[in-house]
Image (cartoon, rainbow, N blue to C red; front, side, top):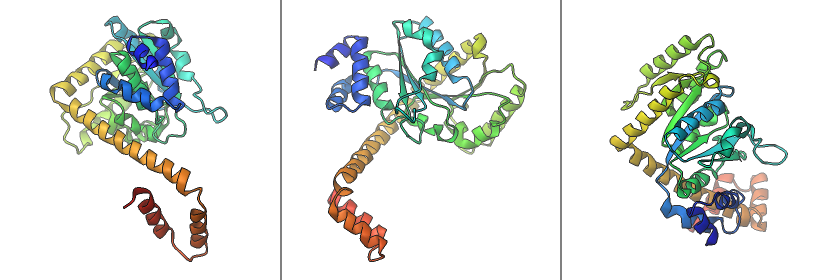
Length: 313
C-alpha cells in the first residue's frame, strides 16, 4: 500500500492522510491499521488531563518545547470538544500551540470527542498508533477538560499528568471525580494564585488516604506555564515515572492491559454495529418491540434472543 509506505518513510502528508482515513472510517482504514501495526509499540505515550481552565494547552506547549530540546520527535493529539453543528473539533487547543505547527519535529492533530463519554474519541488510540509507526518518540494526548469523564485517558497512556489549578473552587470535586486515581504526576499550574499551598496539602492528604498499595507515589510539581516556571522540574518527574515503569516492568503490564481493553472495545463496537445494521432494522425486531410494549413479552427475553442470534450461542 503506497500510503503506508510513504508514512513509514517519513511523509507528513501521508501521516495526515492516513489519520483522516482512519478517523473518517474510509474503506481502506482497517487495511492501513493492519499494515502499520507491526511498527507500533515504540513511542512513549503521555496523557495530559485535568479540570477546565487549568491551562493544559499552555503547559503542554511548554512541555513539548522541553522535549524538543532533547531532540525528540513529538506527536500531539489534542482532543477538543466536538462542535454540535459540524461534528468536528473546535480547535481551541491547537490555537494555543500554534507556534509548534511550524516545527518539523512536531505533528499536531485535533480531534473531536464525537460524543464519547470518556472524553476521548474512539479513534484516538488509532491516531496514536499511526504517529507511533511514523517514528514519533513521544505521543501526547491532551484531553478536553470535562471533569468526571477524564478517566478514559488512563486506558490510552503510559503516564498520565493531571493538571490542577488553585482558586477555581472545584479542587475537592476534581479529586472526588477519580482524578487522583489516574494521576502518575500532578501539576499545580498557575501556582502564583492564592490557594496553591491549600491545594497541595489536599492532594497530599488524599494520597495518604489512598488504600491501594502504591509502588509509585505521584509527585506534585508547581508550575506557571505562561511564564515557563517549574516546567523543567515537571519534565524531570515525567521522565522519572517512565523510568520507573520500565525498571519495574509496570510498563509491560499497562500495555498488555491496554491491548486487552482495546480488543474488547473493538469486539463490542463490531457487535453493536451488527445489531444496529442487521437486527434493529428488521421487521422481526419491530414485532418484538411491539410485543414488549403490549406486555406480551419482556425486554430481557428479547435481548437474550438477539444476542443468541448475533453471537450464535
